[in-house]
Amino acid sequence: MSRTYEVVTYGCQMNVHDSERISGVLEDAGYARAPEGEQADVVVFNTCAVRENADNRLYGNLGHLAPVKASHPGLQIAVGGCMAQKDKDVVVRKAPWVDVVFGTHNLGSLPALLDRARVMDESQVEILESLERFPSTLPTRRDSAYAAWVSISVGCNNTCTFCIVPALRGKETDRRPGDILAEIQALVAEGVQEITLLGQNVNSYGVEFGDRQAFGKLLRACGGIDGLERVRFTSPHPAAFTDDVIAAMAETPNVMPSLHMPLQSGSDAVLKAMRRSYRSQKYLGILDRVRAAMPQAAITTDIIVGFPGETEADFQATLDVVEASRFAAAFTFQYSIRPGTPAATMPDQVPREVVQERYERLVDLVGEVAHQENQALVGRRIEVMFADGEGRKDAATARMSGRARDNRLVHVRVPEAAEERPRPGDFAEVEVTYAAPHHLNADGGLLSLRRSRGGDAWQARNATPDTRPLVGLGMPRRA
Image 1 (cartoon, helix red, strand yellow):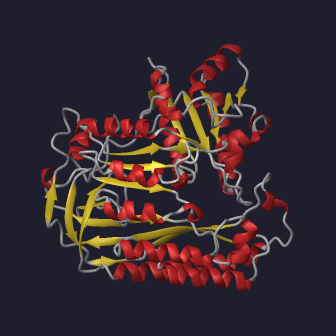
Image 2 (cartoon, one colour):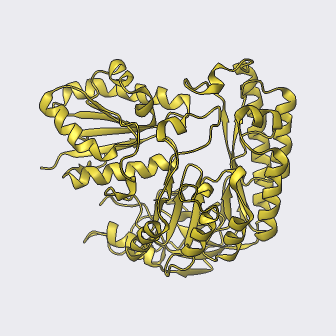
Image 3 (cartoon, rainbow, N blue to C red):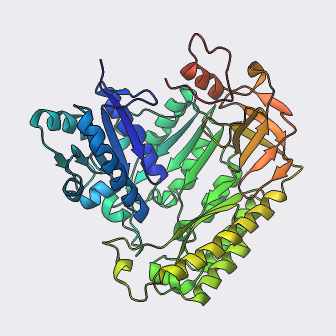
């Protein structure tokens, strides 16, 4: 029988997509995904190095696995991703029962390293310092039948003082537009109808081959792909966000009116210390131009609280920008020291209790603004694409969840009869009846339902002889 595997992912969307590649590489080598609830023969941790709690979670999980491994002969543990790239031999020193450590540049080596560790009966550590080939050439086991990540670049040329990513993923490397579009067209042919373009700084795409307008051109080219219904991207950088990209978003019908624009701080002094090459007025000007071109756009952001040297006045400047920006949501973080970054040795580290108090105030304001923005949508008709694994599943009220065009989460009342319900990947027009800070409800049900190729692809992947027609509330069955 095939050896089985499980991949545990920490961190950003790039890591999620890398985990799809890790799964694809393992399956290409003859491994099979472990059935849910069963112990896998190989457990792979794809790690993050950006947040301190990711380190703690990893070593906590490795500690829990030590006795499991002792009682399951043949069980192998592998650690990859950004923290593996950063710590190299540290992982095996702290957790000597780990079999393989591999980095961000050599995902494709994992099956060979597992074989070598098993034959030699000793840990294998292989960390490449630079990318040998663009990872999109690797086999990929995509988690969704109707939505997909597509990498357009890897690496980063910025030098933000709080971030270690450039040291772990290297300088920016761009794919050629033809390769990207060919991958998207192949995905659409398989039933994918929503793609998200990925890059560390997605809108700086083209820097490697000298075309500063390459990203806007790529968005417009996506508009010409028949069957591609929704295009998203993450994450852009305000310093490189140009008006040609705004125009491409507004003028390309399948590019969604949603934008994740990291702020990090509203204080110009803190932005300078962070080495973020924009200031608050430039940031707000970008949002003004986006909303002038797309009044319905929902804008989200990232904010760090408690960066070294942040004063109460600096923090108030962040609150002021949040109030002015009217974010639909914000990912808020308490600054934590990351060894190897310039910020780690800066003076005037902010006391933890001060950071916590500011963080709570920021979260309250973000929630209040988001709630007000959502309440303005009550009574409006919107299009929802239903998703599996998204939001709440409430059998008592026959509710399914999905995403609006602006990427807001929407919970929708659906018919009681399973055969009348949408499938993940299907579209419906609904009316918003209730707004919470982080989701919308459409309790009036479906105003119209459009079966889609994406829904067909989901059903083909998940259906078995005893699960036709659809069952439950759109939860996927493992293939």
